Image 1 (cartoon, rainbow, N blue to C red):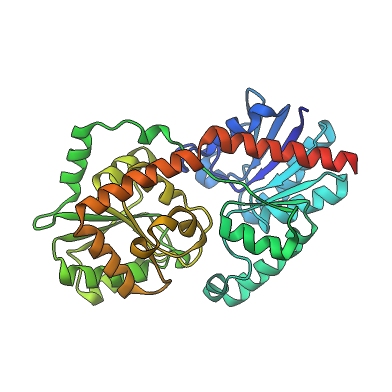
Image 2: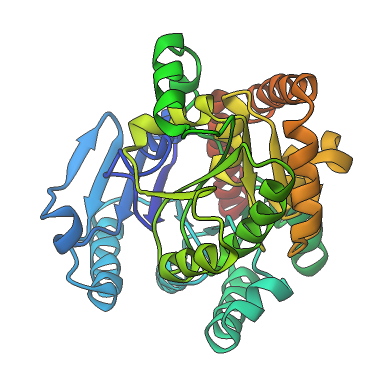
Length: 390
């Protein structure tokens, strides 16, 4: 059964250098479909003015918006035209709030089944609510409304599946894995890795601990920095590298100065996406201290690079690191435990090697792009068949 799907995306699809495999994921999802229409937010001041494009059966519609409000109404207008000019069997949305509200309106207006993805663990999560009591409580109320009125809910971790099935029912919630582009992590030039490591290491430093991601409250990088203080007190040869940018940068730099660890924590800013695999391969360990996440892209990338990981116990980490619970998973906000487990890994090279190898095998087996894409499109086909028969 060939169906046509309308996807409302948060962005990052056309800008192929931003997210790991975002564009290729759309191509793979579409292989079992008749047509795949993807409306993706783009902003003129960031992306320039982009044209509609078509690759195989994937049709991309950038919004070319001036701001977030303009983007909202442009998504609505573009989707309205697509539905009127095409037979759409499923509407799928990238999140339960911003795109979810748009999808819900269109679903009810045109009587099309609605599939909602929720890729971050925000429902009834106290850590999420504490970040912004008013905004996040409002977002959660809206998310719960959209999820309640949707026809299916895709989550990417087992912990979220278990939680949301209690709320929304066994048949409505399903596990839909997320994957990253494996190709950049399959072959590495040993010389390039050595050169990158040499460039990153500074005098007197022997160990590289890497973080890659946004500098945002959700990521709780202040806890990682406090852990860094404890680590370098015991192992002065450790150097923490923080790759990324965001609203918390000034606060985090100030914290590093207050702790007196400027020589042991370096902020590298944003780096080209094509270089990130080399940074993973050049480091000794990847560390992340988020309050809440679903499947975390950088965790999968670290695993594909065969790197050991120390992480707080958010949903995505619980899935990936369950076999290393005692040595890799830490209580949220517990800088002492994080430092302890980082030190354990750095002082045990055999453990680091074994963990990295096991994690790569797990990601290749459980987050296989072909299987994940097939399962995703099959869920849409099943939902469409169920909707038609009812």
